Length: 235
Image (cartoon, rainbow, N blue to C red; front, side, top):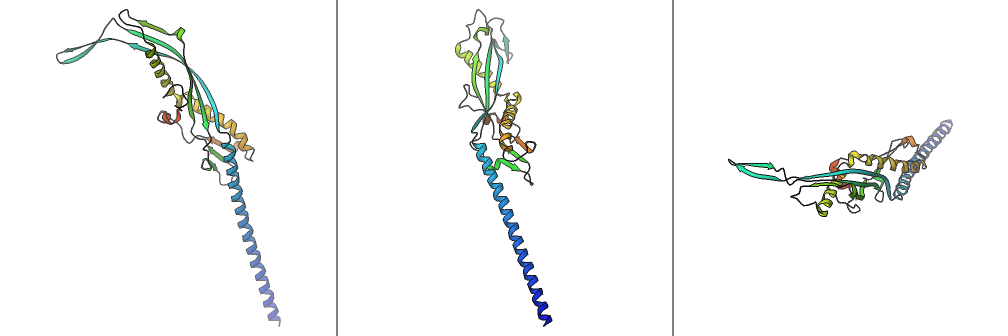
């Protein structure tokens, strides 16, 4: 009789222990699922909040440049089978055109998605990878009063078409220096000033928020960075 009572008590204790273990496992799974759902929800909320900023104009640069061009005449001769180009002392044309160019950088968040958000394992740090910036030439002005040209008596003045072509070449030479100008770094810093308070309002410490572009851009990236559709001068 005592052996039966002992067996009953042991069986009851084992059943209670297994029930507790199952309950604990279920709670842990539910907690993990809840944490995952919360993380996904946070990401979606963050994506939607950032995407609502749409096109963010982040930097504006004013660049002054003097475009110069020399049109020199050469006399080509052939001596003993060799071709020689001799510069003529007459017939030179030279011009210096001051131009003022305005560049604006913007970041388009309309296509921003969850793949551009990275979190640390503990969920405390967050890294936002910005969409590639775009640069627009919003204005290009020639200072006609300070434009200087020298034309030899045997040559005609530069035409308006030639001066326009030289100006466009000057603007394109400015665009080639975009990676060195600092406008892209300014665009990132400006975007960070806008986005960090937004992200911090969702519970992140400002010191744990990192905002970067996907890479350091070079001259090779310019065809993708220059917005020719909105620029007054095409690259």
